Length: 162
Image 1 (cartoon, rainbow, N blue to C red):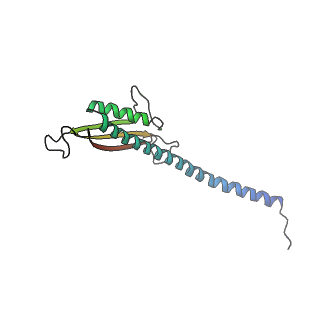
Image 2: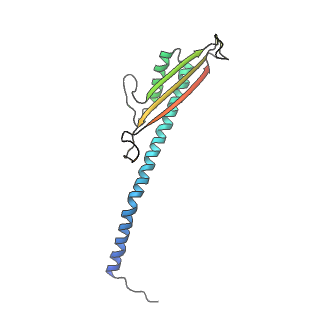
Image 3: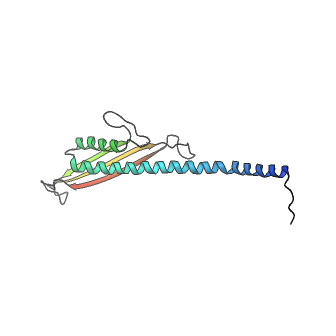
């Protein structure tokens, strides 16, 4: 079998074809890689925020004697655990982002409204809500330039003093 010789024109044509294919595919590949990076960053930030919120709710229900202390304790726990998150803003004495909201209640069943609670062992219920503004690395279509809000909400109840 005799092969025809490749001419210089034919080789240059094949190189040009590869260059055009690469130019068409590269933006799509970069968009997929960038999207995967932003999605994984958002997921990691959300799971860390969830964990910090859960830990704050448990700590406050177990250790805080009143509502004023509960807010301070929750902010301290959330800010300590959220320092590495994108969007974290340090403040004095606690961080300003993520924002932390706490609802604290204690019930000793003196009015018959919380079964299981006693004067010696009241039921403490804490709800901690956190939110953090997340900014993407790349300005994506359909996502506002300011990013989007990640939030977590955890409720924790405990029979205090047992």
